[in-house]
Image (cartoon, rainbow, N blue to C red):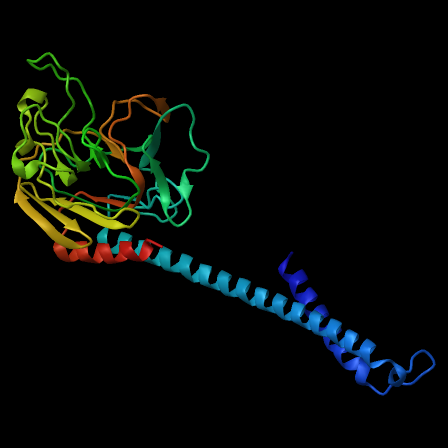
Length: 348
């Protein structure tokens, strides 16, 4: 029912109701009706019907008020979200900003959507979801999909400074053999190794799980936890937990809630933040391979172009990722705190 129809119905119910309540008590005597002679019971029935009409009219009035109030609140919320994202763009000047709320747009320099990336969706199975976005949560990672953002320019490589900050809402946990990657880049180009195995490029990202090197893991690297990874050698035999991953930085105990993660690299030191608080700072020798492909919600993949169905997605996550931001510089602790506050405002 339209807004105008609702208001007309409200007015009619109220007018008819008040009329039925009052008419039985008027002193009207003419050729057609003598109200004074009408039986009291009939009068009470008419009054009751009048009261029902008034109640219905009040309910319509209340519904109309709620609708107006909801629309008003929705307008305020949309305006607030737009303002907050514009603040991030103006103050922080990100190189990549994917809200992942209801589109795959990059809004790093334009709220209306930039064209410096083209997202490709990798899906394990037979079909793509018609609408993978969930209201109030964002893009749904179900363990069988992953976003690959194809940048026009390369991501931070070698020892270049970088910052990644985003919100995650995990809905399931990793297992010993299947970690969950929140983001990664580095690809899987083939490199000839002495062990005869072709391995992937030197990579960078954040995952929730435990390293899987060939040799035994040092005690401080054991356990399922959130950590930064940075494979620094092409060949598997040359990689170990010390030159591939940080120790566990955080153990996620509670599912289905938002966490804001941030990692910065200055060229020699990694700083890791949880909900705006720095919880790890240590020097690492990183030499990330050059690539324009950023994977969100999964591990580094092959060089396929375009959205596709695949059977070998690796280490995908279950849950949601929102407000994914990349900057090609090391962000200060103060700026991380401000970004965290603004991202928190957006997680409705």
